[in-house]
Image 1 (cartoon, helix red, strand yellow):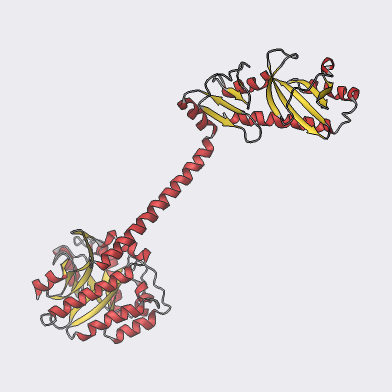
Image 2 (tube, helix red, strand yellow):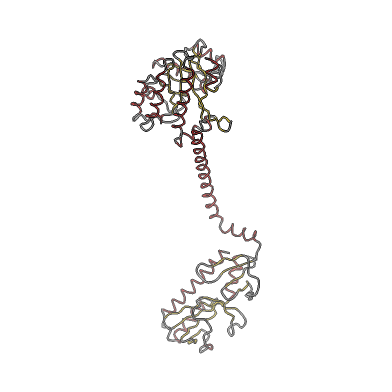
Length: 451
């Protein structure tokens, strides 16, 4: 239907342009105007008549015998449907009128011109043309007294509309065909918007839950033992868990979000304090030289966050039996501006550094040197390669060789089989950690069990 309105709008634009051209002629001379009228009707066969009106009477016309007739068209009309009295009695004609100075030019157009346009554009569907006074169907019959149509499309330029009572599914089908490309573009942007909306909403909801989790002490320390080459527990790694509504949420489900929304900083500092409080409680039972490692991300060492980290690490300096180790994860690029000073300060409090998940992220020998790392941790995915004597262990061997050259200790994570243990011990790996010895359990349970 919109396409029909556009076609009619274009037609009406052409008629108005024709009238403008006539105003540029000497319309006060009817004999000369008649010559123009004849040329226009030859080039525009859909024009029925051309008339010049002055003082409310027809003073010149392409139909000379109506000269002198009184004007029937209202002064404020510029387009309308009228029932003809004499040109084509009892038939509708379309009137296009324009006034300039004392003259008005009126072009009448056969109704079939526009009803045919509707038929050509919309096929066999029944459409009607509407103005303020009349409603005419595609056969040129007045149906103004009929029930108004349910579907209506107005012209934005002229006072008419196209209407129909076709079933809504047929109209929808035609509309979709007419606007398919536009709808595809709209649909694309809607999908993009919804994707961002749900991602953003999820981030907001998760941040809100994390903030409440901090207030309610929902982030709790689990721990996994670390054993030496003799199988004796030499320490443990703290692993965070989110206990919400009696459900345990694992780090893989929230740490990456916490790193993006900045909650990783306060969550980790809260974890340090919880671990410190438990260590105070079990201080007398914890053996000397117990290795206690806690994960941090590189952002903790930045200028804006290092003060809080130093403050909580300083708490552990009161223990004579605990060696605090900060495991720096490789998931982020380490920016060293300002970090060196924080590392030196922490080293002054006896804190050691470990490169966690070595070989899986952004770690380099340069990072090990600038962090003054004391320990390299071999990630589980490389330990998993140790299955039998024919296993591909070149990467593990290279890390072991590198650690010896740099003079740093090694902890192998994710040890699950005796074969892995045997291989690592034979290659002088000092510390082992994994399900072969214990799965992560709440820190208080671990301290109760081992001490």
